[in-house]
Image (tube, rainbow, N blue to C red; front, top):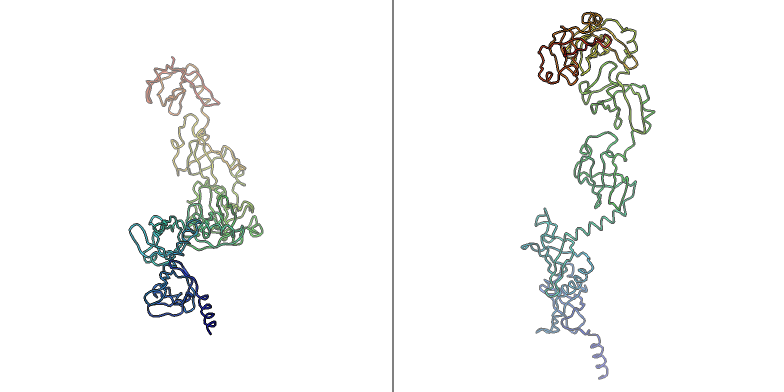
Length: 513
């Protein structure tokens, strides 16, 4: 009997764990009361832990947890345990390890204080400076008691305090996400993204940590003036990856590539010579762009707008939105160009010009415009001819055509020549009268002395008025330099004829008389 008791006592003693105060041990929840929880740690008596130290998920009969042994026996003969201290001790060990290897930890800001936040990390109180919080534009209600990842940037073992950084955690998560995305991205694949920024040349798309450029030329098969015509900030769009360069971090994206290319089969769709209708979508100094269908535009160059008129400003003929009928004159699939013509829809009046306007014949017209070297005259067939300044007077030196003619003035002219191939008609005013230079040569033989009126002064001489419609040139070598500097238009000077060139229609004079 005595042996049996001894054996039972030995078995009982062997079953009791060797536990020490100030250490962490494992225990099992065996009873949950109103204010305390009974825990079996394998010793001869149960441990008592305040219920406030348990989280809701840990309050479960039979659940094994870690506890800090504060006292093997209290006044009631129970073991005194602490769940919170065990959590803090184990948490601190992890915190020290994570601070060394850079592992991110989860924490919950519990209080806003001067200069930052107090954060609960595995039962350890940490400090998050505002400068490292990355909580810009966050309301306090969206911060407090919510879980966030943090990086431990400083540990004080003596005080068991830590400094945290959410900014570095956010950056690290972005870097991890970016590396993952780079592995997932493949040329030719379709990905979803958000429009992050818009510039004049395109839009930047956030692909979830990696930004890609959607260039304006890859947004639409149609011409667009600005990316904002296609996308807006915050838009969620699907794009095709056109090119990847991880070394430079550049991703080229395409939106139009997800749609059929309207230029496929363009030659069959728009035959040369065919008449087509379209809408004017853009007007430039050199021509007008016409949309023939979605994504297909053709150009009417200014040279293809009229057989007879010089078009200096297409905006005077067209407005954006106008519907026009044109003729296709060329299609270039590779360059994506279609050339259109308005004038090809009309009869070419230049084909009959040489027969209608015979050199030497007299015709009438209206002055339409000027250049420094001549005046343009519209003839009755809408063809245009030009009177060169040299063909405006036999005897007068014409400074500008507007000294002789006015815009809108009706004039009779002589056809000097017609070049239908180059679309030019040369007209003359002076040819309405006989060439007077043979008579001028007779009237003003060499050595004729005259008094003339100064008309203008040039570097090469002085032009003087000899008669009502006759001017001559006093060569700079034929007049004293000091005397010429004192001259002004209207002055009278004595001159003598030293040259009469009937072919060149010029009379030369000298003031050395």
